[in-house]
Image (cartoon, rainbow, N blue to C red; front, side):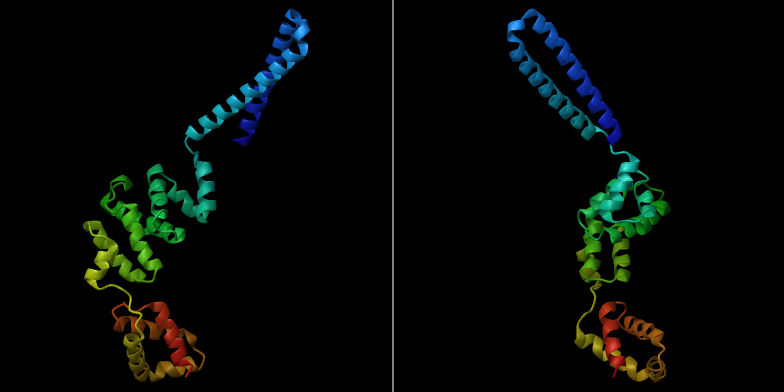
Length: 246
């Protein structure tokens, strides 16, 4: 695109200069006594005309729709997404617009992309519908994703909230409160559960202390199950690592 702009600009400049020179000689032959003045006037006219033409070209360029190749490069750079994800996101103008609207609410661009490419496209396929008629707006979905980003709910709980968003006009936060899906980060509630599991899992504790660190996933899983998935998994992991060092 830049090469075409350069060619056009050079052609315009050349035509302006040529026209200026021709008109200058014509006027000089008619009014030789004003040669220097006429030259300055011609130069000024050429410069003003060139500036006006360049401004018009820039205005037309801004009105032109973004080419697919340009949009792909922009998405990769602006949202730091892999090319294969971008290919799907920009496969239609409407899907690309939905994603960009979503990023206005949720600034975790990768998470936003993952949800569009998985959950959103899954629902559209199952319901044989289009993104333009999708029941969950980018803003409502973005509010849900922000609850994950802020560690208010887990990814598992977010899936439950999402299903509710599909059939409800309520916002994500209201659904979380009504269903009691907020993550538990209260140590006074989590530590007693960890202590109980620790006492009942002597075999696994011994395995971990013998170097089988993969057993950690067992303890985390048991804790999440005991809290019905509400415990903050990151916090649970840290508490278990600390517990198993004792």
